Image (cartoon, rainbow, N blue to C red):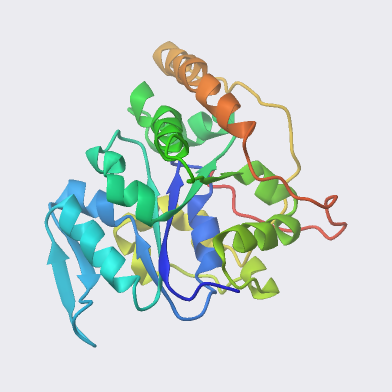
Length: 266
């Protein structure tokens, strides 16, 4: 039986195609979608939410406890899905209520591709901002609580066959799956307006687009410092990726013959 209430959190590595998955989930009916409210809290000092105590209007949360409390209150009357990236070791991820009262999806992507994509958009990124270590810590915090588990998802598997993997993801989360989730109308979305520059590929796309898998390739950089940063990032984060990949959700059926498309966030 699909759940029509509750809070689902999509925790992701930056540049892991998380916005494509989020856009796919936005085809779900009767669902409130929140894009990086904890990042708003950290960057702006506040996050804006619908007011759970009023049919219309908004409320402002100025701390993580209030934000979580209000999201859970909203999730008592409707389904709520939030997406966050874990480029920082945010203190809120240790909140016991967050760990216990939320359904968790942890999204990643092959380390080499994440680092290459990130450096293209943000050459000054630090090794500790790539995020695999933080996602792994979140995974361990959830898994260490008896009876709790998180869905680990590799977006490279999502590329290979979204029509096989998305129904399984929905089943794990108690969501109603529809083939409509494989496509969407192109365009930027108000929900992610503050970070729209990072989501241009998804905004231009119309759905999941299959991309041939290829061996990891080390980019050629004119700047030796950038080349060294790429190597340092890959070396530091690969062990976390490897451990989580062993626990990932895998499609039960062979890849479908029909090609699919997905934006690359490259």
